[in-house]
Length: 264
Image 1 (cartoon, rainbow, N blue to C red):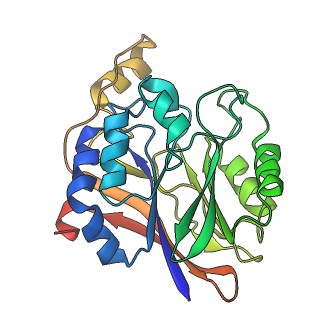
Image 2 (image 1 turned 90 degrees about the vertical axis):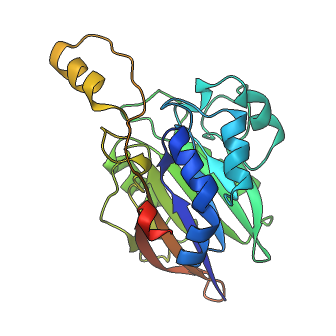
């Protein structure tokens, strides 16, 4: 049996949430995806995700939401992180923070262990993500059939190292956070599907989804600026992973880029 998982890159802004609300099931049909995992940490005005945005995404055809360093941007998500296993935060945040770093969901009758971790190069000095992921695999041993990982990290080297370190043990590994889709999708020697960054789902006319003027001004003056979501057409970026359940390995990874006209 071949299972297809669509991983959706960082959702930026409420317009992107509305776009997915209208088009997610069409996109699932277009790609043949059996499940959708989406990073939603920027769904509300660049920083954070609220309960309303999370619920909208889950009701629209997203099976599980991962997050990252902006997960705490909206306080109302804290309770949902504690109560709903369909939204997770990076596992290497302190245990005292709301939510959990992993969850198990059913895809086509198989148990998928979904893990979220955050890099520490050029980001907050959290617990070692390699050790955090290792602990989850050990703790959940025997309770899942396949595993996937959203590694929310800045440095490409850290992401590649994560992929190679868990090649053959985690079946699908992708990077998020940079909002720029990389062209290195591959199946690693041990059978793990990998891509360094999915890119983003949001307005492509700005800078990483944000309106360009404040960012340019900050680069020019080094003065603080208030960022806001850019206007313009929403484009979905991500990757489609195909998993052979008999061979227990990923057999292909395909980059995905869908503009509104493609999903009509």
